[in-house]
Amino acid sequence: MRPAQFIALFLFAATMSLASCARPARLSHRAASPTGAGAVACAEAAATDAGLEILRSGGSAADAAVAVALALAVVHPQAGNLGGGGFAVVKNGGAVTTLDFRETAPRAATHDMFLDPDGKVIPEASLVGGLAAGVPGSPAGLFELHHRHGFLPWRAIVQPAIRLARDGFTVSQRLHDAVEWETDLLTRFPETAAVWLPEGKPPEPGTVMRLPELAATLAAYAERGPEAIMSGSAVASASRDHGGVLTTADLSDYRPVWREPLRFRAFGWEVASMRLPSSGGFILAQSLGMLEHLGWDRLPREGVDRLHLLAEVWRRAYSDRFLLGDPARMPTDVSRLLGLEWIAARAAGIDRARATPSAQVHPWSGSEAGEAAATVHLSVADGAGEMVALTSTLNGWFGCGVYVKGAGFLLNNEMDDFVVSPGRPNLFGLVQGEANSVAPEARMLSSMSPTIAWRGSESIALGSRGGSRIPTSTMQVLLDLIVDGDSLRAAVDRPRIHHQWLPDQITAERGALDDTTRAALEMRGHTIREDEEIGEVNVVRRLSGGELEAAADARGPGAAGLTNQ
Ligand code: DON
Image (cartoon, rainbow, N blue to C red; front, top):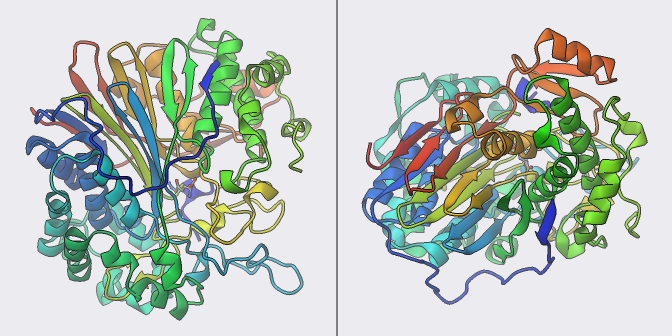
């Protein structure tokens, strides 16, 4: 049913302290006023333009990031969203913080809600229709990001998205292809099909599309903030009409959460990424820690040795991911999983000449705890030193397929990121543990990895789409930049590989492995599967002299730009 690409150190501070809940008094976190300069990289040119427009008008990186995310909700509806959720990392001078606007399970959610009375998984229930949707986090999350880090008035930030929805935007080839691919899903919901399959066909590339209902919702959002979306009955009705259990109380009670970033050092750089409920920062911290321990940077760049170690460290990090879930419900002390002792022990278990079968790699037992393109990543820098890395998602293309009548957007199918049934792989093949089981108001475990790394005055903001492959895609581009000194373009273009413990295989993009390297990996015991694309990384960088650079991944139709271009 889903597109092919779907199918799939040293710890500096790892306090698990949660966060201040959202809605602090307005605080100025700015080190300096925006200067009109800046850089944006994201998945669609019209959204990049929205961000550049905000930067040129004196907006901060956070202002521009929110404008880009809202523009993506219009021009990239298969993934950009008001009906989904995400995470953002913000760096301003020395201060780094992260915002969790992940969806939550409805209050009526239960551990076995996706099982029939015989304990069998109800086909598609966690992916299609109302039951698949978590409480959307984007409306409150994007507003909160602006509330704390914005510079321009809120209304100004929403304007580019309103214009795109009201006056129209040009349908991209990718949007056409996504609608065509998901025609079966979209036609199951008449309201969805009426918008996205006008006259029963996907909108033609190059034609202009207008979304008046979404324009009206955005206009109300510009006036009244998230209440305009979260306090009405439209979302709850859409959910109920299609078998869901979201209530108006679920929606009005939703709060994003500011969390301490997961901070660590890797190869001489400081890195800040997302902590739980995303596993993204965890996988980066643990696997970069193992690589550093193993002297990965001293191995030849080309050839089998580095690739073998990448697969081996990811195999181990993804196996520990099995223990993770919403931090509010976790019995496991994650900081021990990121401690030097465990990282060194894990690294010591790696055979440099032989793949360890995943069946022999188990999650840490020291605790009592037992690619469709439906995600978008955007990176923004302003001229005053602020950077934002923001990843948001509906999970699958067009989420659960349910269109919120009158509001103009689609609901996510993020409930599939929970463990629907023990041992059952999710949409991305991830096998997860009880810590990530469904529970009322819980946040489902994510792999999204918005990340900012810096050394001295040089800094990089990056992240990816790609489900379970998000951390590995992000990490490969980061390594190319900080270890091998690649240009942004070269780092983003370089073919990637991926391993996630289960299934026990290396997935490789075409061109990632020449025949000799492939044969050498197979000799070491790796199984290799080819895939067309792994991830879609969008990155901005501030060089030590202050110059800005941006690159969008050519695997998608994304665009990068600087305000002085
Ligand atoms: O949060 C997660 O890890 C997934 N829901 C992300 C889904 C995704 O990246 C889909 N597409 N590229």
